[in-house]
Image 1 (cartoon, helix red, strand yellow):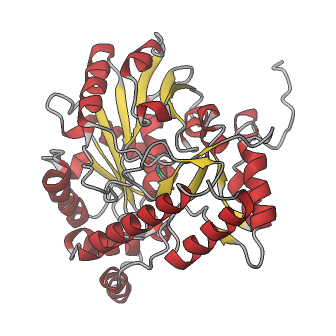
Image 2 (cartoon, helix red, strand yellow; image 1 turned 180 degrees about the vertical axis):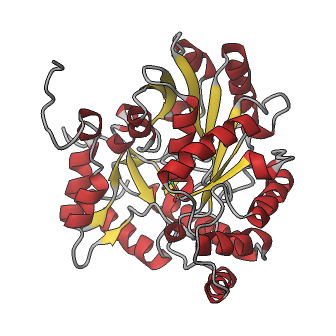
Length: 393
Ligand SMILES: Cc1ncc(COP(=O)(O)O)c(C=O)c1O
């Protein structure tokens, strides 16, 4: 008889997944607290996108949509991918799968690319969902380390050393949550060579593609010649169009990959919500001044936050973030507190929510993630409070 597991209720696979500190912090947030925790835009979804959903409701878009997405949405995404990302999805109907946010497309990418016991390389520090997602497909996350001394760019020689016979994929996040790093084209070219030489699938998470600053350019590795069969790129409507609650994302890759992935998608959620998909068409085909406006406002907030952080004791930003909406300062000389204790102490003493770097992996220990997806007034007050508590440099 098979050995009994600890609980008859939940599988060990799931019970062993880590809890996120986000839920704990949410419970601690009380009156007078300023949160620099948000992982989603503070902006409302632009009006023309909301209006498209209202119209779709009146038109009766209340039935199951096609699994991979409405054909006109796939068509529009195919054009966007070519024009903006340089990714050629010549047959958008078979090369794109619209999902419930990029969270679903990332998980399904792993289901599709990875078998149990295989290994996938993940960034450390990196977005906290990658490790648990890989564990959910019974595979092993193997980290590649990112250092602020390297500007949090990927050291490709170190990455190569992490490849084992069982490694089948690499997760890239560009621009990065939590570091805000935009990966250099030259680094991406080296990673493309690694993938081809070792027959690895690249699962690229480009949820923050629209938020780059100071002239930094976002490059999609899926646009490189010869990479067509090695990359599945995951995009999101959540950040670019402030549509986090609508749950729309999509994956683009080789037809054979996406057609297989759409089976998983059918069994997982059937389709991304009909009204959200109709709204997504308005988002992708409509005016983009709103997206540019949000990007420039994030840039203004980033510059302000960096200026203030440079004046505050104990926190050091070695690497100017060039994308997403996060700053990832190093915590200096603060006794024996680890980043979680430090973050909870800031919450208690300064009433400012920050996310401990350890949430993003071992290499995140000693750092804090501060989000500027909140209004300027709150950012200014939060900086005043941190300065009062920690002192001036
Ligand atoms: C790097 C990264 N990827 C993916 C996601 C998931 O976004 P969504 O599922 O809303 O598309 C997030 C959300 O914060 C993120 O930060």
